[in-house]
Length: 348
Ligand SMILES: C[S@@+](CC[C@H](N)C(=O)[O-])C[C@H]1O[C@@H](n2cnc3c(N)ncnc32)[C@H](O)[C@@H]1O
Image 1: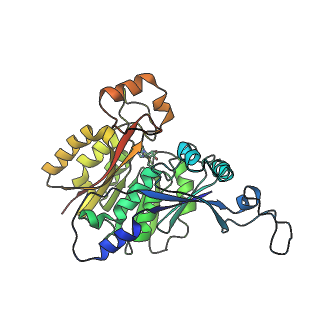
Image 2: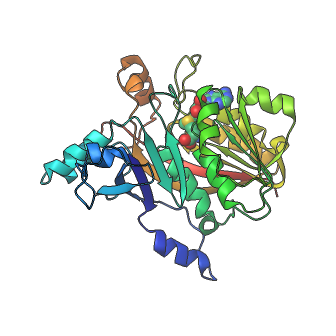
Image 3: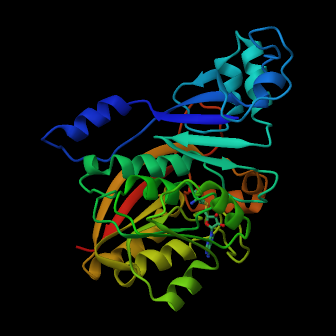
């Protein structure tokens, strides 16, 4: 399956970016998702098993794609209640989309950049999700928020906690003078996923893939960057020991506090922080501001909080309620909501 994602306001935003006068503002995007069957799914799920001459078709190359449905204004990329509601009068499309979501291949495309994720092969690896595309969209339209993240001056970039590597690939594709990109994650499956997905990137950019704890790597390498992209774990917990892709606040706290020594002059660290951990982030931002770093809020988006392992852990969910981690959102299909915030800490 391919999910091709578009900012619903894309054309308007592009026009505004090319106009002379900017009124800087915090962006608040919404996304439309185009769902495609890919390659043999077209034969086996969409039933196109004859060619134009009537011959039986068994397989098709992955380059063949067929649009099955459009999910307007989708805040989640896997939103079963929305799919069931949107297609309640077209149950064949509903069932086809639901079937496609079970595919062992998940391609995601945004603004011409695509990643193939194999969820069953890359265990617990974070594939492109709504927060990933929210991040890419935010840096794309960052000039509207008063900061140009993807500038021609970018030479060295790193994606910390890269997961599938979508954001790092996006930065490498869009920054035309980039010389070095490092993809770093603690999950060993990131290595193969990033390797497979970066083959087509130009030879002028050196691609480094590191499987390591971020703090350990940054402390030992002493490297500085023009862009640091960080979509970190953000779910607070009363006893924050165990490692998971979504839990913990230590990584972003370290990164923000140390941004001045990790960035080159003119460099920017862009990070996604949920309203769930804004209290903790604000402390680190305060420390960064004291060191003379500038803070820019680029974009925000309210999204359902949908992590089964947390939702089903009564003690944890009660703790999150107690610290006011969730935002109110009436009349929806989800119990808990939070707000994603993309912001930049820049060294001028
Ligand atoms: C929310 S996911 C984001 C993945 C990817 N950047 C994206 O936006 O799709 C957070 C990622 O950080 C990684 N991570 C968590 N703690 C880390 C650490 N201490 N060092 C390196 N990576 C870490 C996780 O394995 C996970 O892939």
